[in-house]
Structures are given as C-alpha cells and as structure tokens.
Image (tube, rainbow, N blue to C red; front, side, top):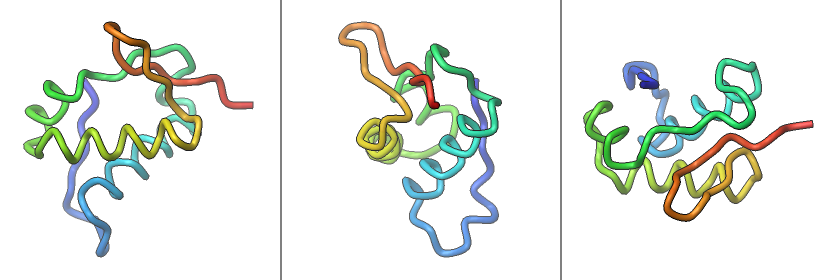
Length: 81
C-alpha cells in the first residue's frame, strides 16, 4: 500500500499534497502504467485522512490524465508519454 507522510506539506491542503505526491510517483516511475491504486476507502484509512481527501486527489489526477477509473474495478495509472 502506498504511504505518504504529511509532515512537509508546505501550505498545501491535504488533497493537493496527496495529488502532488502520487503524480510525482507516477512521473518518476515508482507507480507504473496499468498499476491499480488503492481503493479510496482503504487508502484513506491507511493514511489517516478522510475519503474525501483521497477522492479529491484521485479526481484531479484523473482530470489531468494520470489515472483512469474503471467501473467496479478501481483506479489505474494511465500510460504517460
């Protein structure tokens, strides 16, 4: 499961910080194309944040094309060219 520390947020909101960290991991190849991201509920519980925080981060990533939602399956990392 992905784990992030919220110690060095530097003024970002929780969702912005989470969005930036996941995006960086995708761009740097730590999370690969086709890899399934944790469910919103389990990820939120693991990080100690609300599901709304994870949902907002995932929504921003999806809007920018970094991840895609597959109904009844979850969120998957998109291939980035």
